[in-house]
Image (cartoon, rainbow, N blue to C red; front, side, top):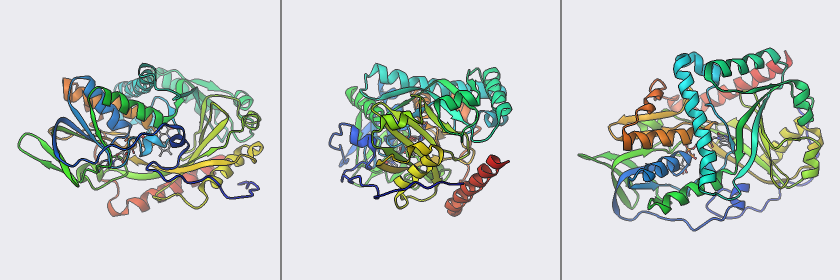
Length: 441
Ligand SMILES: Cc1cc2nc3c(=O)[nH]c(=O)nc-3n(C[C@H](O)[C@H](O)[C@H](O)COP(=O)(O)OP(=O)(O)OC[C@H]3O[C@@H](n4cnc5c(N)ncnc54)[C@H](O)[C@@H]3O)c2cc1C
């Protein structure tokens, strides 16, 4: 049964008018004035469209390899999902490990999973190498179950080690309840290599490193169209254009019109986050781990404690492009439904973000026409996979690295056309129903 907290006042956070959404992360970062817009026709070796983590990693890695890169961003660096997410960095994809094995077989699944793990390590290394301050938040990640499924979890751990070469630790119910003081969780799987970060600060750190190498980022510059020229591509913007040898499309779910052969394959899915005001002592009564946590339901909760005593709690999905009324309170109700001790938590910020999903739940990475690339649809597992994709695309363009072809079997399938919102919403309701049934049975 769903429990409701006693609430007094609505979320009283003051909405600061700024170009970033009013997230906890934006309130903690030193934000600089926007660059752009582009008002001329300029040339580059590569034009990257979208300054989320996919675009930024591609741009930084290509610039590091000596190419001249221009990034166009409709809003601000990290304005999309990349600067609003829950910050949990772990190996794997939105498509689960078992489904990946079923989809591509053991050999390719081993390689793909290995690449995804390298993406997670890349994030850790960049934070250290670039000395991005106040970004690393904690080690480890628990996936916990809301139903009794010891055998299933042990099999998953064993299969992941044996078939994907990735070691995870199985945790009995008692271990889980020692760190998460609730009856709602049963067993868990711990990933000791995972960690969690402040994602906007990470995105801004990559952008700064890219600019320091001579890379150009033009914010407030929306790409309107991509036109083929004789030996180049022209990216047209409202007041200018970029002529580039290569174009990389990294626009995810925020604009589905810029290049239909790719964007037709993307389902935008919203998910929601609340950040609570600092309450260390209260959190100690419920959550005794610095590791991030998510439950294993198909559209489950995810949360983590931040240094300084805040809780960031996320969950739910929908097809709406706006946050529902009093979403912060609703998310705290979800938290209270698990941890009754946390009824007095107060929201400081709440927000939503859009994830781009492909129907097969794997990233879309490849070359749609000669020298026109795409790296998108990372779903809810983008922190490691955007890093992986950026590396692969930069390597493909500069050195002919063809490992991106491993993603060829995950095609640009049309994601439902005019019915895509209804399909996504229907799928979510079906998932919720399945989750509820599995908790009862
Ligand atoms: C609330 C939330 C929680 C999440 N939690 C996690 C997590 O804990 N761990 C994890 O691994 N993943 C998580 N994710 C998923 C992850 O954030 C995304 O998969 C990842 O950030 C996608 O990066 P991206 O660069 O592809 O897209 P985005 O970050 O969305 O960037 C796309 C950018 O392109 C720009 N753009 C769009 N169209 C144009 C255009 N025409 N011209 C110029 N610019 C354009 C947009 O303004 C945007 O800045 C979460 C996502 C959300 C929303």
